[in-house]
Length: 382
Image 1 (cartoon, one colour):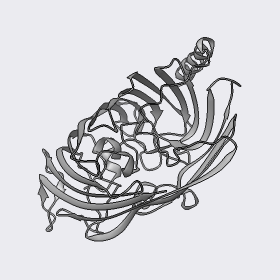
Image 2 (cartoon, rainbow, N blue to C red):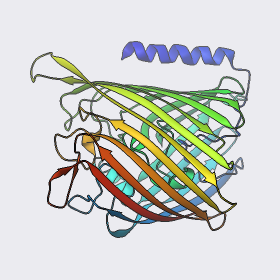
Image 3 (spheres, rainbow, N blue to C red):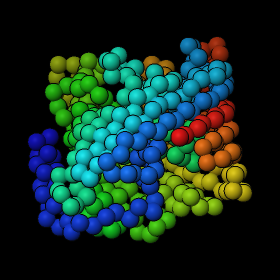
């Protein structure tokens, strides 16, 4: 871990030495970055708001009314709020701050392991420009995660629901982020973190991460992320080192035909025998592709296909699943989108899962291979 931190510090110093005050080409916004305030006025306090309401029905809903394998849109046969938040932002020439308190079923499911006083922070960060006249920033606090091509904010994405790739990667991080443009096409960010999606530290180790964005054209974004951490905790006493990397692309997100795809893989070291220095390595991986076609200015149709495999339950064991069952599944989704106006968006999505290891339960508790989930949503942003 110490050698990794040294590498990051050396990389940061090298980055500073080549910066020429360049700005990143901003035609495509990275979908992993949450931002409800489009216009940034220096020295101004800005307030935004977002409400994401839904009704879902899951044929394999588990006890308690939750759908299996997810934290987003998780309630079954119930009108609910997936997420509602206020977005308060202050931006000046060399400082910035953001506070996003959130509420809803997503917050309840995804933050349930945090101390109660920390369970409502979608984001809470402060940053400053560490090189006056250059676009090099250091931000600290609870910050958005760069991992995978989807954030928790459904309005920012081609589909209403999240992919399994996003559900089993961090939606939020806690630590410090150093970001800098390398050229008009490349942007680099380095992270030192408490861990894999946790606000309160769970061990004495720190994790590190990186993000490299590449915009070859004004219609294409390619993003590569890495993560190295140590995941031992009270809840996961046998987990040790975790190594993760993902790569995704986003094509023409505002165009008539839009697409995105994500590929990732991870390694989790596990102490195989209690009290002995015997290690095994579990692997997990995911791949998906999403497309959207605009039928007219208000109506569009989206589709997604995804493969997810976590036979050792390295990450999927933490979210609404039968004990001892690692998730391995394919899924396909179709989503109809109707933009009522610039503020209001209505959606209807159907999702079908096919699991090779019978990861779902029927109403009698028997293991089955398939699952269907239907969800309708309406969200408004201001």
